[in-house]
Image (tube, rainbow, N blue to C red; front, side, top):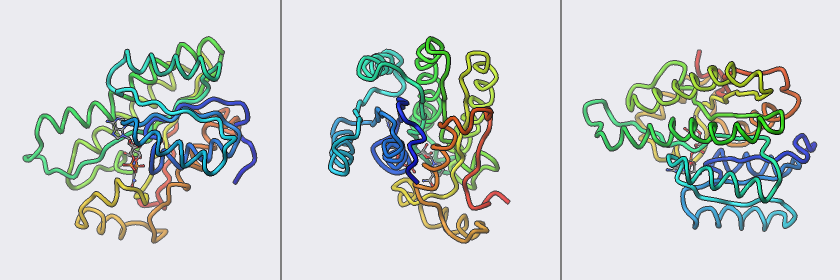
Length: 251
Ligand code: NAD
């Protein structure tokens, strides 16, 4: 729904080139926000920007591709967003990768990759965002968690473990940053129709779908709507929350 819930707000959304992130970028733009989407490569960033501009040439959107485990590159990217739009109100730490690798087959390389993108990037982007938010006296940090952060998954243990860490960062930073008027929340999606899900093997996905009381997997817009609420002033008294958007799959 488009009711300009984010008029004049500036949002940075990591992993904004496709899936949940792209849908959130689009919904935020439709609701009056100015958005900087972060992606992993120039090519995919440009592709996403072109798609949005084709949809509405008035959208105020830019794209950047800092390495998300490199504090210096992140700081430079945030500076560019600030110089372009004049403030940074909302950060969504959404970029993430999943894994279904069994424990004994995990390589150290895969372990480091998951930690870097799913945990370290959340820490670093939040660290870089806070001085801007502190200066302006308010801010919102939102993280993409997962339903597997509640009860784990049968294979690929580092993916749920990384999302448990995201929940830990969400709850701890909510307390640490509350006095600065910065709210920190997470959305924990259930199985959602994106590339990430189509990359997972059938034997991981099918048993999960059977556990969903609403009887269907989610769509990226279902998750984007939750971000819209949490980013808006309607959620002014909500912080430290992990909002499960999963068709009750957890129960
Ligand atoms: P996706 O694979 O469609 O998109 C992932 C995004 O992350 C892309 O924009 C990609 O560019 C970015 N990204 C990945 N690796 C990166 C890197 N090294 N550097 C910078 N950016 C990188 O997946 P999605 O399903 O839209 O996932 C988005 C978030 O939602 C992730 O954090 C994921 O863990 C979470 N999530 C997804 C589901 C689901 O079922 N799809 C469920 C729960 C949680």
